Length: 302
Image (cartoon, rainbow, N blue to C red; front, side, top):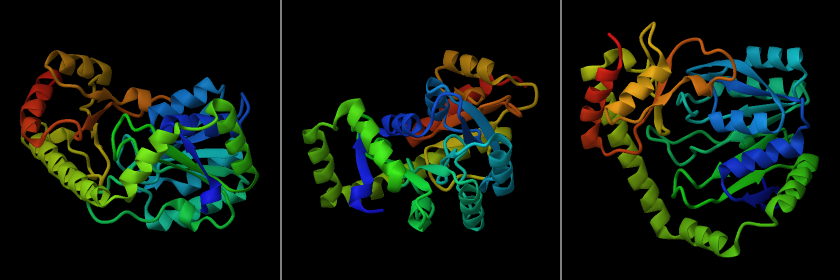
């Protein structure tokens, strides 16, 4: 995408909300991966949209199911996190990229690519964004600095071409005219300074260390919660709970033990197929992981 295709927004959630408002009308259907980012579900419902889940696995959304969902619902918009998906950590596999593009193009639809985790890869370099392989303008690209820089740095961008890009730029103008100039200048100076590369290397090392410490602790105290596929980046592990466990009750019990985890239920647009916890390894130092998992184990029924 060119610089003229980008519009600056005050954070990724604002970028997502603006995109949904600009490209839909109440009653439209939004396709999402199942599970998906709960902020996307909240934004869609606030816009009066119907949300239809599309099955996904460790390699990302299932292209045949996506094509079937487009045909069944008449949807023209698909929200996707193809890299280090939140909450599962899955990344869209290379062999599925072309099939996903085909499903979107054949439906005459748009794909919203939420690339929030571009700077959070741990194992190897990430693949290029889907937008980089989109010659026809079907991808609307969202990128934020919040996770990689600082939560208070509310800077993000939307990239879109053609009529969709024009509608998005008009919507952002109506929302808030522009993001404060001093904040944009601070972000620009940060991103172009040598310190940015050093920061990203340090971030990657810290995430690797904390993810490893959490996995070690789970294998020691709660092996049933170790995910079948360990995500190659991102901030979270998506842990399946034992049969019969209630994720909300476990979350409440864990909080009483002094451990903050997130129940899986809110991340599903429809009835969840099982009980899960989202375990965030980014927020606590590695040396606390073993004690945290020991306490979590006390909150899970045996």
